[in-house]
Length: 321
Image (cartoon, rainbow, N blue to C red; front, top):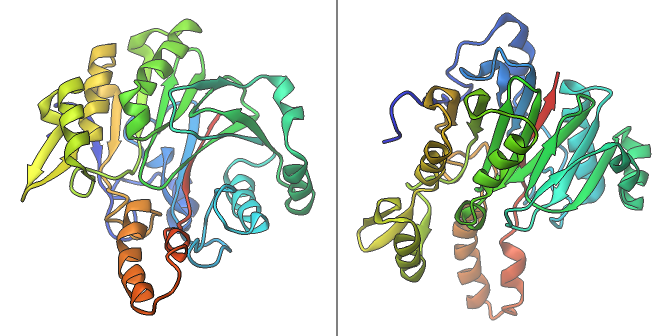
């Protein structure tokens, strides 16, 4: 169980269970949005907006159907640009999208005005077609932003999308926090980035979006033993001879150590592997095992196996008001 006083937000099968303000009717009916700041118990009154997307209502074809937001998949880049432009034009019009090449690190990238000119040629070409203004900041797994005309995008398909917001100074860090990033303390790096830019711990608010949870996040015995050795036994749960990792508890404990007030932390209680409205690499892997068995029975090249584990990415879009 998470520590007391943390806002645990659940969703129903169709729409999030939170009370929706009258200004959120459009997003509530938009199936491309899984959750938003307007539904958040912690962020709804803050000067920041975020949208956590679903996998629905895009243009990508299987296995990326349909709102895939990631260029680094084998999806058609034009489809990805269309999907990104759909969210940006609807919820963040006239703003520039910033993102990074996520590498499972603990690196935080800062964005300044010169980054407007860093978009790749391919992205510029797509921009002309879809009226999408975007900029790739380079390799990293976190984005620090203080500009109201920018929208940060974090891509996930089981990893934790995390937002840390300084509600006094109007700055935020958006994080891609998978197992490697969590173990490398990317959350602490994000908090320290804000503190170094004038934030105070008591003014920080944290949102942890949908991700793979301990119900589904099975890890190997060697990794489980290493996690227990490095971080403690409580983060590993053993069931029926298998080991399951609780990244949410690791993140919450890290928030505690940093001094984040528990009432300023919100966790979306959704497992991406269980929720079919979200992309999940682990679910795609499980589904591919049956296909692999069929391929082997037909004596098809085993090189086909790697192409089977393909899925899209949903995203956390964040922008200051």
